[in-house]
Figure (tube, helix red, strand yellow):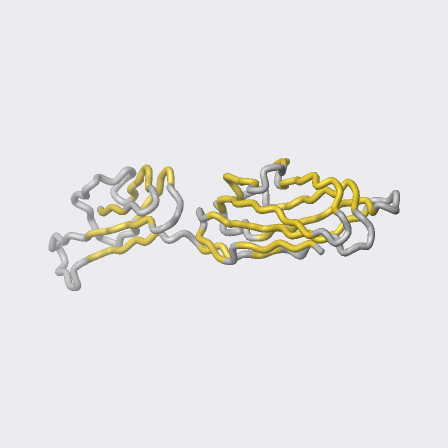
Length: 193
C-alpha cells in the first residue's frame, strides 16, 4: 500500500505539508526498498525532508528504506513552498525486491492533488463620482499584498480614456505617465499612488 496525503488548499507562496505512507502487506519481507516522491520541476522550493534521510535529485526526493518487514507500516514527511499555481500534483513510487524473488517490483500511488489559490494582491482605484470636462480631479490608487510571498518588483499600469491627461503623480510614474514600479513588495505591505 502506498499513499500521499497532506495540505488540501494553500495560497501561492504558502507551504504544503505532505506525508507518504507505505505498508508491506505481503507475507514476505521487501528488500532494497526505495521510496520516491515526484513533484513538478517548477513551483516547488525550500523543500524540507522532515524524516531527515531523503535525498533530493532533480524533481524527486528519494528515501532508501532498505528492508520493509512483512506487515510493517511507515511514513516520511516533507514540506515545500509552492511558488506556481500549476505546481499542485505529486505522486510516490516504491521499488523493491521481495525476499523470495530475484526480480524487482514497483508500485505507484495515485496522484495527490491539492488546490493552489492565486495570489491575493488587491488594487483599488478611488475617484470622484462626477467630473466636468477640463476639471482637475484627484485619483487615489491603493495596492495591498495579502499573499504569503514577497515580490521583488511589481508593475502597475493604468489605461486612461481618450483625452485624459496626467498632470502629476506621487510617487512619479516609472515609465511615461502610466506605469509605476513598486520594488520590494513584501507580504502584508501596501501603498498608494
